[in-house]
Length: 153
Image (tube, rainbow, N blue to C red; front, side, top):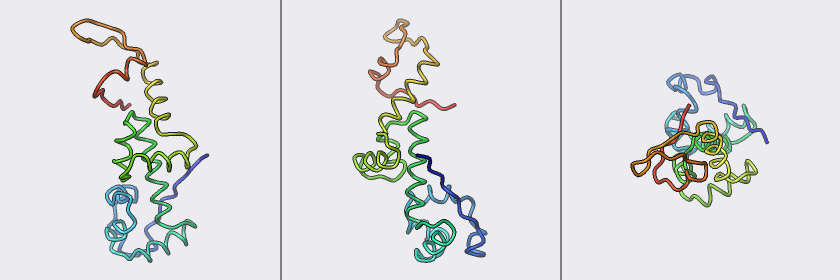
């Protein structure tokens, strides 16, 4: 399932959005919360919803939900743990995040995480120094590490 999030333009709100930097950045700053986003651009939630319905055929809450799931997917593909991706995108419960993510993408977030890590380590099987000696770490061995660094390219 392909999900695209069309970003809103700045003409609907007039001068108000002339002060806005970037809708994605604002959404993140608002922790993907509809009320907080409306407060940031100094409009009512109803005005924000009318705009989204007119321009995108969805509510601002739906748009923010789709955007936060896309951000969570990015984080998982970068190697963030499921719990980290959930909390960073404003979910309070990991179980709720997993249900919503699976419903949207048809795949558990842990599967995306494992795929990302497996792909990374298959490409970059490196020698690591463990306990004072060099050992090769397989993809499976990675999960025995505590606090391994996220990878970003």
